[in-house]
Image 1 (tube, rainbow, N blue to C red):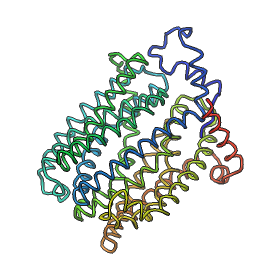
Image 2 (tube, rainbow, N blue to C red):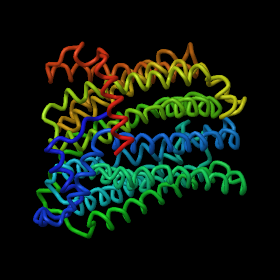
Image 3 (cartoon, helix red, strand yellow):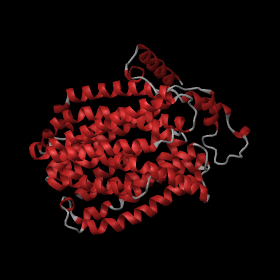
Image 4 (tube, rainbow, N blue to C red):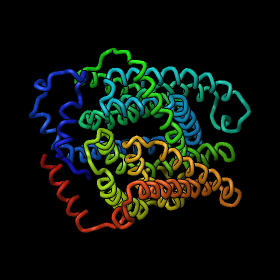
Length: 470
């Protein structure tokens, strides 16, 4: 869903995996560069989308296994442990991995320097996170009574592994190595499935087994990405300069407020229910929200290709490209939602078992929020790429506040459904603010950005044909 083949992109692609700026350009394989430029259109999105679709399919299998093997109560215990570990991994790394990606893509620091900063932040931040977490686990909060203490302890191993796997994945995406990512991401999900079968089904380790399976997946992803970067992009040990550290940290801190809110919002329902509800309700909501949030793969596939091109300055008027992709992403996500909702009851019965049928109404409530989530992803890609992460920060925190306030207001009357309504309201508020700021900054009219047109479908068809034929 992205245009490709601009002259500026050719220059960027030819240097995408160069480690040192002074490397002789004659060393670049120009045939490979031309091939990469051709991929910059439909094939890059096609490769990324196919990869994410594979991840979605395998992750659905994982969710199905967890539902059948753990049932709603065990699924709820697993959800609170994973949510806790994930939020710790986000909060305490200060988004230095994002800052490292941005300046590596902008070619202001080398790959080796940026990855050194990102991984160092992951390790230091994780150590602080574990020190903060241990007293909480043994405290009196109701959230930490939703799973055994030993399961929460095991989940702490996920903190550095999640942050490191995300950091190396960001570097590959920034270098536009979508081919390797198309292999690594589904393989990671497959590792989790196989480990879940072995540990939860065969060895009957329950929630702890499911956590260990997730640990195995992140170990695989980190190792695979590091090997690829070393082999193909010249990754080596290189200390960053002080000025590089300052720039990366500055971007990370400005981006961090947005990222914490953005990553926390899909998990607020699990956290809130963990404070006020039982494990079964947590399990039902976690299963429903994860099933729906996976439809964000369409927006994610487009955004991951669009971001390095916006950040590198390869596109002169990125707002036009963002508008085009916004319309196509919303149409594709809306179509996927319509199909899922039409078969929601038999789908839940088959994938998650009869015990999860009370989650079906939650899918319908979440649908408008998921559509807003998909569209908002395009605006976040734009503002992050033009070095305006502060706009995203305000947006996600407005959404997060709306989410929490809605849950507190609705929970006494609606129970578990309040979590679904709150998520939908929060995601709509966030996207509305992003859209308002996008139109204000670019001066684009509502019709120019939102109104579908015949040319969109003609462009989509042409892009798909070029992507398949490349």
